[in-house]
Amino acid sequence: MTDIATWIDEYHKGSRFGLNGKVLLRKNSKYQEIIVIENDYYGKALMLDGCWMTSLRDEKYYHECLVHPALTSIDDKSHVLIIGGGDGGTARECVKYANIAKIDLVEIDEEVIKVSKTFLKEIGGEAWSDKRLAIHIDDGVKWVEKTKDNFYDLIFIDCSDPSEFSNLLFKDSFYKECKRILTKKGILATQSESPESFKDIHINILKTLKKIFRASETMYSFVPIYPSGIWSWTFASKEELYLSKPNCKEALIIEKGCEIWNLNFQNAAFKMMPNKIVKELNS
Ligand code: SPD
Image 1 (cartoon, rainbow, N blue to C red):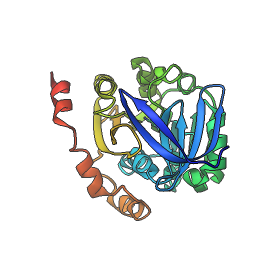
Image 2 (cartoon, rainbow, N blue to C red):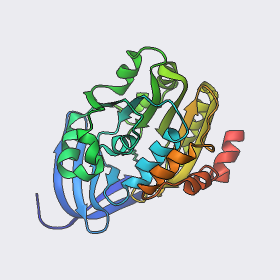
Image 3 (cartoon, helix red, strand yellow):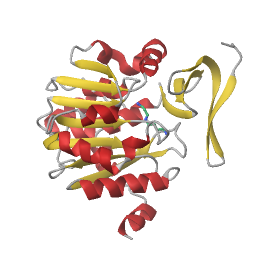
């Protein structure tokens, strides 16, 4: 790779979101183009098929928001499923909970895990050697289909934007299957795209989850390197959700080890739905 700093951009609807730095890796896996760049401010960053996935500086905005609202609001959390999440950030946040017995991480692209362990090992951190973590190189949709009913307490969908090979992760049929394999009080937590740069997909995820699950709630925050910066995470359950009534004792312990997430941040983030989204959901 060249030592000369270069720009790597995500192109999105006539805008571009770029990082300048030294390209450490550029290769094609069976599924996608993988780029790792090192930027002075954001540190090492991972791009898949032209879309920013994560960077050392801003990854906690994403992973802490996906994981902690769900895990602090549920007592039984023995079995956890992560779909995608090959950089290890979601697993790293999960292993902070001693009462999780087993985490199945199902990633379709083995190369993403290899690259993350080599170039971005801080993101997965201790999780990679945690005995409770089982890595499966498999298709998340197929994994869910072959899982027995009422099995997982938590399902985290840590996927890329909809594309040729991730499209099915955004379909009604997939969410229905997730509902089937969740325990009675289990929670599905998914990244739900940007209300600004991916507005139609965002609305569609929210409407679909509302239709399929008894309860669903969305929080908004920032992921600086993603198009437009504003991002969302949606939580759904067959029963009521208790996101605003977390286990405070546990949450206060978790807060201490977080860079972004805490209970005040979370409570505000669940009230941040932009009015244009409120109007569209009500129309
Ligand atoms: N536009 C990018 C959406 C990607 C969401 N997943 C990121 C993976 C981080 N673990």
